[in-house]
Each structure stands twice: as C-alpha cells, then as structure tokens.
Image (cartoon, rainbow, N blue to C red; front, side):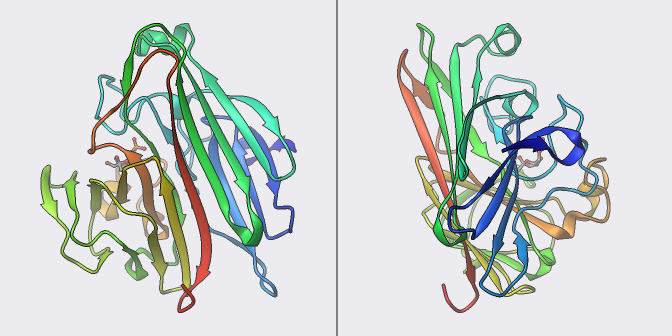
Amino acid sequence: MMQAGAGGLPTVVLRAADGSATATVHQHGATLTSWAVSGAEKEEEELLFVSPLAVFAPPKAIRGGAPICFPQFGSLGPLKAQHGFARNMEWAVDEVAGDSCSLVLCSDAATRAEWPHHFKLTMQVSLLPNGALQQSLRVLNTGDSPFEFTTALHTYFRVSDVSKASVVGLKGLSYFDNAAGSLATDDADAVTFTGEVDRAYIGAPSPLKLVDLGRGAVVMVHKEGFQDAVVWNPWEAKAAGMADLGPEHWRGFVCVEVAQARSGAVTLAPGQDWEGRLRLERDTLGES
Ligand code: TA6
C-alpha cells in the first residue's frame, strides 16, 4: 500500500501475512525506514532508528533506516560524494504485494553525469513469518562495457542506549578502522561502544548478532553475497557536528551494515548481475 510517510514523502507500507511485522520503505532512496515486530502479547516494537532530526527533503539522504550506498561505499570508488548517489535519488516502485515490494533505479543522464555507466538496481523487501525481514539488492549492468562498484545496506538499528549494545561474530577479523585511518585486528568477544566506532570488517561471517542488554533484545543479521560488514556509531562529538543527528540522539542507534567494501569492488561485465541479501530476525536474549 502506498501512503504519505514521515516527512510527507511517498512510502510503501508492508504487512506480514501472519501479522507479525510491518515495514515501511520511502520511495526516496528506496530507504527502508521502519521494521516493527509484534510479539504474542507485546505491543509493536520498532527495530530501526530514524533520527528525530532527519531531514525529509530530497535529494538529501534520510538519516536512519537503511540507506543504500551505491555505486560506492564511503570513499571506496571514484565519486566525490561519500556513499554514492542511490540514497539521494527517487526510485520507481516496481511491484507491491501485501508483504513485499520492489523498487528500481535505472541509470539516466543525471547518474551518468556522476558515474558514466548503465545500470539497473532492484531493491526488494519481504516480510517473512515470525517478524523476519528480508532485503535484497540486485545490480545489473545494462551497458556495453564493464563497471565496478562497492555497496552497502547502511542499516541503523534502534538500541536502548549504545553503551548497552554489542555486536557479536567479528572476533579475529581484520578491519579498517575509519576513525584511526588504519588496519587493525579485532580480538574482543564482542564490539562494544565506549567512544566512536567506525569499522569496516573484511570478510565477515553470517550471522552477526546485535545484542541490546537494555531491552533484552537481539537482532540476528544474516547475509549472503555481501562479503563485508561495517559497525558504526559516531559518538558525541561527531554526532554534534551532524545537523540531522545532533548532540542528543546518537545514543539511540548502532549501524550494522552488510557491505561489499574492503574485500574489494565487484566487477560486472555487460549483461551480468550481482545480488546481495540480508535477513533480519528479532530474537530475545537467552533464546538465540
Ligand atoms: O558506514 C560508516 C560511515 O561510512 C561512517 O564513516 C560515517 O560517516 C557514516 O557512514 C555516515 O555517513 P553519512 O555520509 O551518511 O554521513
């Protein structure tokens, strides 16, 4: 169902066939902005974070939800614009069923002015039984020469307080520490947050587990196709410098992003495609 969403912008609203979850996708950037799960006796619980100071004024990217980074993640590519342009563009709604939708973005003169390639992106979201959500991104080379890209689903998860959150599954991996500007190895059992964390893990396993001790909540992050994972919270000083986040709201989220980043760019020959998939499941602490 299409309806006006946050900021008055057009959105697609999905409801799971078993009534266990709802999801909202803003057409702007094909940004997944809500994933809310309803337990047996509990009220609906929102699992994604959208900044209370988010600006819903295209082409500005929405601060929160799951912006799509393409054709580059961060500065890993030829564009000046960090994270590319897909999150700044109006996507076309392709298909909407009750519990799933797909949106597409095709290259045009505006995209080719920034990146001289022909492509079609398809972003699909489906609500599965028991509140789970699946999201995929397909990249098709519609031109007659090869191109390479990096990408990510830059998902902001809501947490009770970042100091009570941790990300499990990354021990022993190498990561590029964006805050320090150097490579490092993670030897901790879990990533915890006591200051800025901005890490691009190389070759991350699946699933990863986001734990929020404050709510007794766990989100399992299953990925396919995306080789890497990124964990980010800006902490106070950086957040204060971001007008659409500000000095107060940074405690309320952790980004756990499935990415094709430091493992290297994907190269697509003409007519070739690549697909990355993400499946999110809400669990309860002690049961996962
Ligand atoms: O994924 C982490 C990151 O690349 C950080 O370095 C941080 O800058 C963040 O994304 C947000 O980027 P944005 O361009 O949305 O302000």
